[in-house]
Length: 155
Ligand code: SME
Figure 1 (tube, rainbow, N blue to C red):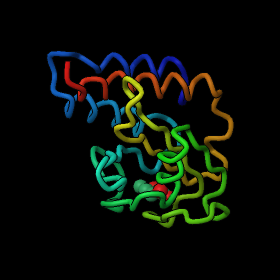
Figure 2: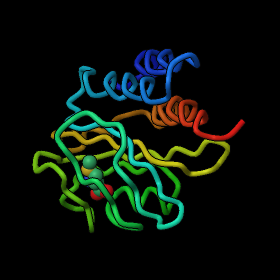
Figure 3: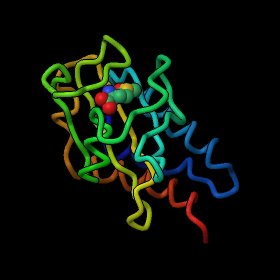
């Protein structure tokens, strides 16, 4: 269940001795293998020159490598710089389907020091799955992954 205990567990992986890749790998694995019906969990990194989002660490089926600027749920989350919960992907104009099982989706922008570096993307095969997550928990999840992304910024 996406709740505070899971967020705390995910945060605990952010050990400064470890590489960002290993930390992110464990963090994404913890989400993907939680009890929740999450069919895909991963990161897309923003190319600041083009506005495209590029596939990074993930678990799930092989996914679209590049999301063009302003396209899909990811493009919408980048443009608004706010988390987006999509109850029914079939009703979202421009949704990009990487897996036909996907019914609902949540995309959370990651902005260490207010610089948007990428997004966390979660898919579910259950319609409306992300609707019932408390907004405070979404903020916590954003904060946890933002703390990891902070390590991409120069000191
Ligand atoms: N559905 C996303 C594309 C990425 S996949 O879900 C992994 C979108 O519409 O932007």
